[in-house]
Image 1: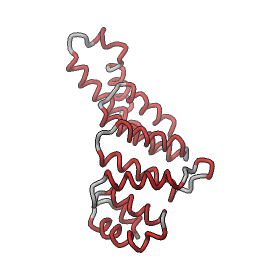
Image 2 (image 1 turned 90 degrees about the vertical axis):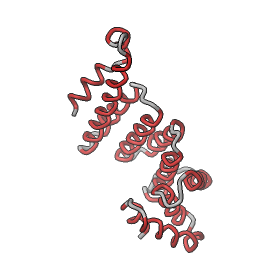
Image 3 (image 1 turned 180 degrees about the vertical axis):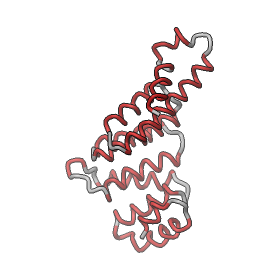
Image 4 (image 1 turned 60 degrees about the vertical axis):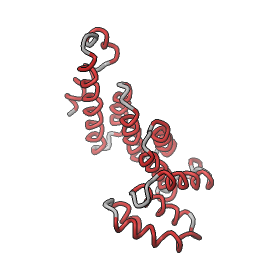
Length: 193
């Protein structure tokens, strides 16, 4: 995977577009998409070894190839996961905010808001990086309004909100548990219990 990523990324380098691809921009587009795909795959493999800085470098290189907005959002989400392993909340939050900024998909944006709120409620963020209560409540409200009811992002936001606002626990917990039990996401079911 690293060799393929390297070769595709080299072939799709924007600096050589005029030289190598000027007469065949369609092929360049396909090569660029393959480069982004292989760089992302390689970054995920590298993260399994906890080589966080290497994974982030690969994801940034993929971002330099200017994928479409949906691809950028996926890359920013992958970067957020890398920052999570590094326990760098500010970078994690910034990466997820970029997902919100570039994505046109309401579900993807809802997931990013829910992930930011989840980091605050379950991650044990150190106090200097802790966002204010109204900020977390705004993230949860946005996640709930953007996500389809019953979706993993909506269920996650309900679960987080019930733990963030204990006064709402009795109201939200039964609906969140029912949504988690009917969904396919094991992580939301685990969080519900």
